[in-house]
Image (tube, rainbow, N blue to C red):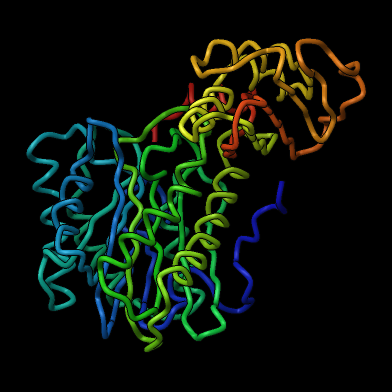
Length: 400
């Protein structure tokens, strides 16, 4: 298990979506939420290039902003992203889609661009329309406050929070002169189905839309698609990647993918550590599978198993619950070839217990579970959290 999330990436003093050259951001209190909390963010790509790529929820109940952004991303170009918290604008009918369109039109009017160059993201309670007067005035305020500073990036990352406890940002620079930065929000209803909650990632690399799209898909496959807090697939999940080309550096595809993956991994770790009610950050690694799909399916099933989650909340190395989950997974396995370990201690091997469970200490924040099927060469790791009292209490009371 690697170190915990950095929160700012490796370059102190710069970070988030404005770390790469060519980007400005703002986060403001528009009045979408009750009180004075920031609730509207804007990220603008000043170019000279405006390539973009996106990944969206696989849930067949899609929020209006997802439907809109999927359409505008077909040309793989974006000049701005507007995001709001305080309302998901999901299951709001044709009127909700009109609200999304109107939001994009307002951003376009303020920036002097076309609405088809504006992506829209929303997060919050499903089933309620947004207060459009507040959204419209918030857009105007955000445009007036756009800046390329670290502060503006943090304000934007803060404005998209719902049940999150802190903003989540990351930034990395490559030795050849280009960089990648990003922000993400998410604390619950998280499962790896193309994207996880809302993320905006930026780069000043000079690359075309196809290269950007391929890099995003490869990076997300190793990061966003390997986080599973509770098995829930949001109606609003969106990950956007924008390229300004401001560095003038045209990296090789592998260089871009590697740096992008580092940033996305940092963001995903932050999501894991800030998940609703989480007291444990848990890595479920499956090794020795015959197929990669088997490893992924099994790791996700163990991550989502309520009995495993409650045992780990109690710091109980109950390998029997893990073995149960493996056995019901449907993947090819043989209990007499399988090993199960927790925090480096093998508890079960080849059909029988190895040591007493009391020899494993799971009292700390980080837990690593390794399941070795002993059948093949495929391996994967899924990040998850425990099932705590706090998670149940927070989600039983959630209404904003």
